[in-house]
Amino acid sequence: MGRIRRLPDDLANQIAAGEVVERPSSIVKELVENALDANATRVTVDVDNGGTTLVRVSDDGDGMPPEDALLALERHATSKIARIDDLLALGTFGFRGEALPSIASVSRLLLRTRARGSAEGISVFVDGGGAARTEPAGGAVGTTIEVRDLFYNVPARRKFLKATGTESAHVGDVVLGAALARPDVTFVLTRDGRVVREYLRTGSRAERAAGAVSSEGLVSCRASRGDIVIEAMLAPPERARAGATGLSILVNGRPVKDRFLARAVAQAYGSVLEGGRYPVGVVWLDVPPGVVDVNVHPQKAEVRFADGRAVFDAITRELHAGLARAFGLPALGANPYAGHLRNALSAGALATSGGAPFAPGAEREPPSRSEAHPGLFGAASLFATPGAPAPDLALFATEGLYGSLRFVGQIKGTYLVCEGTDGLYVLDQHAAAERVTFDRLRLAHAERGVGMQRLLVPAIVELSASEVVLLEEHAEEIGRLGVEVRAISDASVAVHGVPDLLLRQDPSRIVRDLAAELSRTAGRPFKGAVDLVLATMACHGSVRAGDALGREEAEALLRALDRVDFAGHCPHGRPLIMRLAFSELERRVGR
Image (cartoon, rainbow, N blue to C red; front, side, top):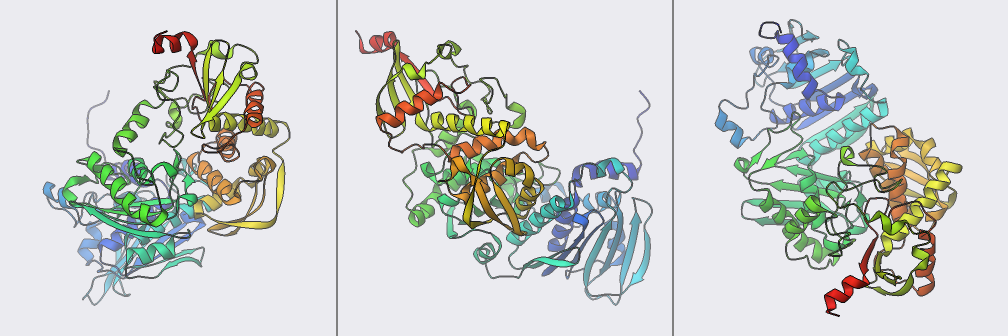
């Protein structure tokens, strides 16, 4: 090893840029937040080629005097904090003093600014982290920062950028987040010289959400518990989607991506939302700065609470009170947080032991992709739960197992009770039907593509800009899944065809969940996401919990199960059958 030495500033800035500047939207986020910290009332964002050739952010804020403009380009120079205690009472978006020097180190950056009360401003130009060049400049009060040729001096980083449409969509999502954070500010977004988004300042968060979120029937809720204040604009449960891409969450005005908070919001809908589905809308959470840490993520996209349990419970219960009145929701269970912990930490632990099997409405989020084990319990057991007991594989070794069962009856409109030669069998009817539908879809896709039924009248579906781009990019592959969609704007598509196996299902729900699944698997080859998408589609085309099944339907489902290749799980890894041996039954009743 060589001797320890201090890194040059330009190298240190590039290292910092690796965390702060992931893509053009990262730059937009940092610059827009700086504009808001400078008391801007209007922010304009211009991008060319998705932001790879140009990102320009202009504001009418306070501006900077020349000495501050130069100092802002040095590492860890900031006006927003001065001592450690300031981190516990942040009232600004930025505070680290890393963004501008990091951006300047991987681009050609031009900063023009004029402070309020100054006769003239200054222009500062930095090329790839080199020495700053300055000159006097005119212009209105405020600041404009142009970032050109992103990653021109680190070409390896450019290879990780996505298509222009994808990068543009990410920029749109950032501007939307800023608009939801600050309804009192006007935001304008232009792409390649054309205005694509304009959020005019409004008088309230609810007004901003109503104009910015593509969803019908948003209901306003506001509640508080102690120092926690919750404000929300949320859509009815039938508008819920697989994945949380349609849900925006802001903590103290800062947009965050937090699965913990998203689950808390979903839990507020109670049993009417299936596990893995999340509502559409916006939730603002305001807490004292001292109980939340925003310095836990390089891009400040995540937060940590001093008492996460209290926050979770407050969101779930207080939101539920308002949502129940608006949508007629059933009452919550005794302790939603405890239920969340049981399902998140030990999902599946009782699924095959005869204890508490299936609970279709329970929150059971699939593990991360790194934890998924395709094929562990069968060719398409997609989401095997770490730590869950393996199923009794001998149970499925008998050919024609399901067809040999005698259907006894249906309980709770959810479970099929059957008698076998060796014991009592209980099947989750939705998991079983989902498995059969998935197998048919996958077989059709492998052979010739899923059959499509064209719609007489196309269904119009509102989506996020990034989801529209994903659907456009994969239109051909999606067609082989039996779905035909065409973009009609940057935030909506027309559905012209759906899989014939799912003809009775709502086309809007099929496409929204298809887009959500593609968003969750973004960055992976499409073929790697096919089974996940087919599993989502199968879920929609299957018998659901609560559907009444007669004897003929139940027996047909049992016969169909014998024709699929699996080891007792639905496509999402949930066990669909439980056996109670007659010997165990007799022991329990004391015979």
